[in-house]
Amino acid sequence: MKIITIGGGAREHAAVEALARSGAEIYAVMKNVNPGIQSKAAKVLICDEDDIDKICDFAIENFVEYAFVGPEAPLSKGVVNALQDVGIKCASPTAEAARIETSKTFMRELVTKYKIAGNLRYNSFDTAAEAIAFVKTVPYKVAVKPVGLTGGKGVKVQGDQLTNLDETIEYINEIFEGHVGGGKVIIEEKAEGEEFTQMVFTNGEDVIPMPLVQDHKRAYEGDTGPNTGGMGSYSDSNHLLPFVTEEDRAAAISIVKDIVAALAKEGCTYRGTMYGQFMLTADGPKIIEINARFGDPEAMNVLTALVSDFGEIVKWEAGGKLKDEVRFANKATVCKYVVPRGYGVKSEPGHTISLNLDSIENSGAVAYFGSVDMKENRLITGTSRSIGIVGIGETIEEAEQHCEKALTYVNCDAIYVRHDIGTKALIQKRIDHMKQIRGQ
Ligand code: AMP
Ligand code: GLY
Image (cartoon, rainbow, N blue to C red; front, side):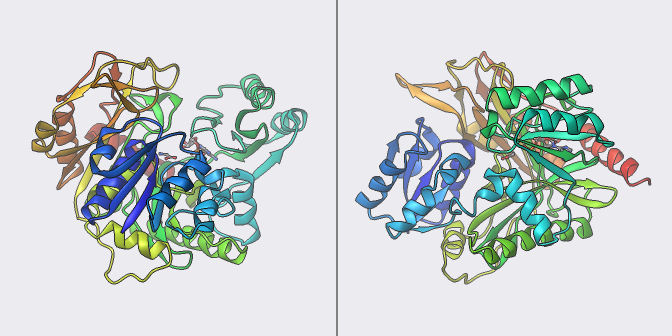
């Protein structure tokens, strides 16, 4: 199969590796030179990832048949609609279907309309005055979110980033004044518990669940600091998480299935990967957000564990038939992102970074290149997450050790890693927290 892939991060590198294992001929579009993607691609186009005209021309010139889109920005601009118009089959959603991510109000309204489980109380506001009047009287703690896209960094939660009412009001004003994420606000009830990610493959009708993953959004160890795109993530060999039961997972899968069905009923069939971010509460999983793509870093966990042919899954999502059951290895994975110093507040990019891929592999790990670039034959860090290192093992503990060993083969003088991700101590904290929430 000839496929165009859009995106130059570690999530897209993981997808490109999986497609390359399927024998796909890859035409890669990215804004930076990602050497991992470049080494697997038949041809590369360096341009803005939401430059729809250039992307369509590149696809047409190279007679590609399929498309896979990694990031949300091109989805929101309708890259899939444009590619479909020129006859390319897409394993990613149209702009209409992607509203499930690009408008948090659309998502909540859809879930309300179809009486789907796991919803939270929410209110959307077009003016700062109305939002402020609401937070002054609301009797529960809230999460304040810009309605549109913010690269996963626009959410502030009372009791976490917002310590009092004044800070909450200040943040609401900041969103409206700065026109952050479209300049409208959604205020949601705060859900208390532990978060997990359930992603599925879907052709718009059937869903195939992937293993559960837990991401770590906070920038610093011990879950402190600002929210980021995600500092690292882990998955377990049984495809559950140490604090999530089979029943909790089934509830989450059922919610995602209902959302896929609701979108089809609304006339915007959803194809591709759907990402469900849940808070496991005393009352079961609650929807935190739904994304129209793979999670980053979560894609690195699941695609590393994927045994089945990813190319066949992509063809099925785009409208074809699936011959075999989709299988993931019964292995645990721990992903830690190497990020530029300052990431989450103000990154210090432009530093030389080097790694020894053979030694990383011999450590029982894989490296995925992210926001890096090639300048005068040197690999340099960009402003976002540089390299994802995924350790693989029989247990989370073993995968974590493999990841740590592999990290010693990454060298740069201006990087930061959250070493606590996947450690026994942090996982025990999650288990204890969940027990406390469930009153056990
Ligand atoms: P999002 O970008 O919507 O995933 O939000 C970023 C982070 O904010 C999530 O991973 C949660 O940790 C937190 N968050 C978002 N919404 C809520 C909510 N309603 N209740 C509690 N925490 C939330
Ligand atoms: N890891 C969170 C996201 O991709 O949105």
